Every structure is written in C-alpha cells, then in structure tokens.
Image (cartoon, rainbow, N blue to C red; front, side):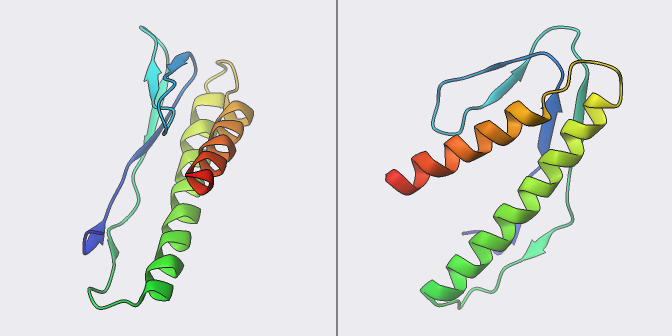
Length: 100
C-alpha cells in the first residue's frame, strides 16, 4: 500500500460498466461526468495486519463517500440518476473481493 493514498472517483449519467473485477465505469459520449477527489490520506509504513485492515476499511468508506458525492452531482444536473446502480455495483464488487 502506498504511503499516501489519493484516488479520484467519478460518476457519469450515461455510462458503460465493464465486467471486470472493479466494474470500471466508462462514460458514454456527451454524458455529464462529475469527479470527486479527496485529500491525501497518510498511511503509516509500519502498520500491523490489523492496522492495515483498519486503514483499508477507512479508505473504503472515504471512497464510498466520494463516489456518492460524484453521483449526486451528476444527478443534480437533471440527467438520469445512477446513484442506486453505483451502490449496487459497489456492493457486488465487495462481495466478489471477499469471495476471492
């Protein structure tokens, strides 16, 4: 894991969702897109396994929150709302990750 984690998340009104493990979103041409970027998140280098898991959960919650912000920004433009589908995608992705 990097010492600093900074990952942007995005929401798109019209999009394709790839069938990969992370269900990557590809915005369709001319669709509205919103990008949310959080502040750098320092991660100590000398964490135990329990500490790494705690940081992973914290970062997961942060990314979920950023994703919701991006999806809500797209929905506020009057385009189709995709927040519900994004939440389903996140949940399916989590379930796949825990099964692996």
